[in-house]
Length: 184
Image: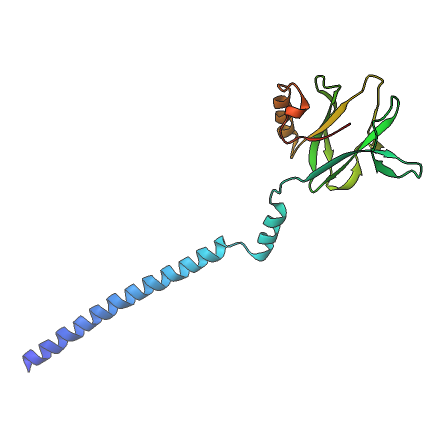
């Protein structure tokens, strides 16, 4: 009986050790599972954050530039002829995001020159470029036989300044990459 009692006691102790070990392992596993769930929950953005990140993600700017004049009905129409000396032209732009822009011109394939520098253009369609609520216009000179205008754009003033500095090394506007140009 003594041996039997000793065997039972040894078996009970062995069961307690196994139970303790499996309980500890189960508790550690449960804690790791809960911790990983909390981390996943905290690191996964919610629907509002996802929507805001989509809205704030940088999109490629889509830009459309054209030269326009007012017709006899006082409506803006695309320039459909080579303008004469003294005529005024304006620039209509469409863009899907706010931009900083510089307008350059190259009369008669000479060296490019800046007409205006670093204005902010808000997003929108078919807007006439203006300064302080006045439409910007260019008056054709007698010497302007061929003209090319290019709008250099960037997301901010600093990036625009870098683009302009890089362009100054170019001989003609036609050599400039990513320029949005119109001409006659």
